[in-house]
Length: 468
Ligand code: AMP
Ligand code: ZN
Image (cartoon, rainbow, N blue to C red; front, side, top):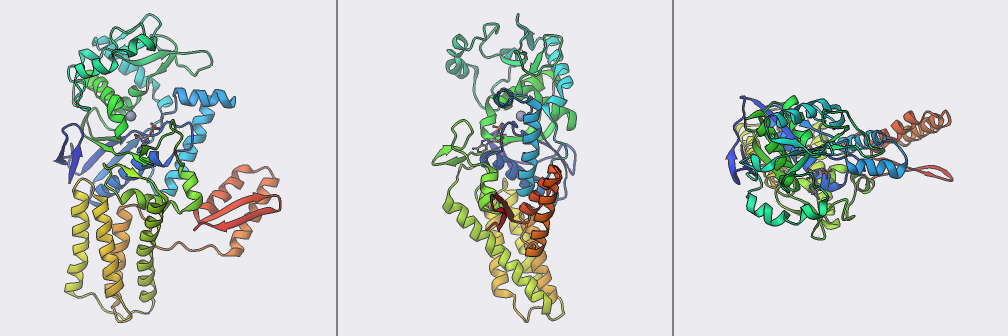
């Protein structure tokens, strides 16, 4: 398997620290809102990477955090007059629902920043002891960037570039306690009304960059195989993670760094701050989320990808082609004559796996892997008929279902709920609401949504429709 390593700017053969094992850390979302489809890109891409490594026989330890303490969360809590943890709890729950819809496997561990504060305080203490960090008068702790000689090695920036780019920032930032404008915050004092933790420096909270190094070390090790995230995280987030981690542990933090390109809309990065985003939930009202997943995988993960209605429609049609081929096999299998596939047919089918693996081995070329699945669809459409043996049809089915599932695509038809069952569940939900059992009521709504049934509460009662 070759992967493009941002650190060396080359495609490199992947060599795990421990044979057969992969320890990987993916920066997760800050939970103050429903995730948008840009946030879904790293989730889908690295989940696919994980699935592929499992397919190749690796035992994968996949760690991905939730940043649940941050200015944006605090501001949202103030706006809504609730506690910060109410906001983060809610959006972690919602994020997990979206992940499930996208068929993103839950991480081996989803650590939360607020549960790892002790570890962060310990790391900051070590950095101070080693002279890599210092406390300013107001209790803020900064990292002494210039002391870490390899600073800039991931983003390929040198100190002079950074000086040129950041020269003016100090004057306007109000960070007068910094020794140097390159220094970044490890711990900051609390402000009125903010959540805080007690530390040796002041009551306050950690800076964002500290959480990932602590969690990666705790749940994987001081050196991990792969660290991943969106390309906007290369600088400063990942650069700062390396600096803290390597200064404290004195070993290389991560052997490989993988970064996905942006999901754009009208040529601009989709982001909350530009307000040009669709949430995953918005998309789920119009499409099965498998379509969104398929759309994301139709491009190489490092390329920018422009979101458009046309591309979503073509993803929908593409996925339907695969599903139709599977349905055809299911139909033929019901009446197929017995017998096994012959040698030539077996070889032919094995060839699809070989070409699929070859594409995925080349820095996760999912676009080519999808083309291989389409070739297989063509083979099924032309090669499977009433006279095909059960053995051949079963092999074809196993092949298409397996390759699709490595991409996280479910291509076997779900059983459709009958109208009577839907009505019964809606009645149960109404009953639960009447009894103020809103948890059950929500469960029923979500259960129906998973099966493609969308409920709408209207004045005339509850209406439902099937998602297309
Ligand atoms: P955030 O919640 O902004 O920290 O983002 C969570 C993850 O989503 C990070 O890995 C980001 O790099 C990634 N991300 C955010 N916006 C986009 C986008 N438009 N395209 C691709 N990845 C994104
Ligand atoms: Zn991170």
